[in-house]
Length: 233
Image (cartoon, rainbow, N blue to C red; front, side, top):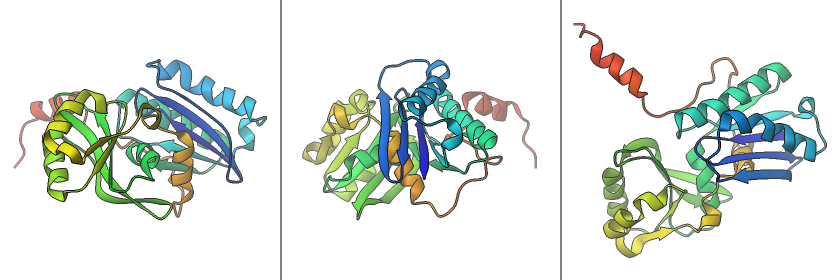
């Protein structure tokens, strides 16, 4: 079985081809490039290097968010388009859980983090369990202060993963002290192969037509529209 994995949920871009539980190719970039220009060519290039054509793909795994609105939307749009045109099953997986998979060997809590501006973050908390991860705190959009309060109460070592962690590293260190651990740069790159692995563990595929990104918060335009709408009794 051949899987295509796509992760464009934030600045990084990752594409992977997995065949019969063997990773054929994975290409990831942390460069802040335009995903709308790079993502589809990256998929085509991965297929070429793996010596397959799109029709050979049996299933598609995509990082569904949260993260950058534009990044998430581009990855989901490409995955849905391919799933629809090729008539292949589509599996959406959490971008945070995909990132957290890099810390599976850590003995403690694993906290993937994506900056959401204004001292807010997209985050979740996991713990390694068997060959996977168990959720301690679900994907959410929250203030960094609230997240750190919850982690401090748990009183365990926490591995923070993600390229955006460096934005908040000083605050995290001050709040959690020696319980704050930070992943190396090599672990901060989300891997599309991890998205495939997570998708393999799902019981059933998502509906291609109904599948939507998981932003975890409404857009600024939506928020402004809500403010303008009159209240209804």
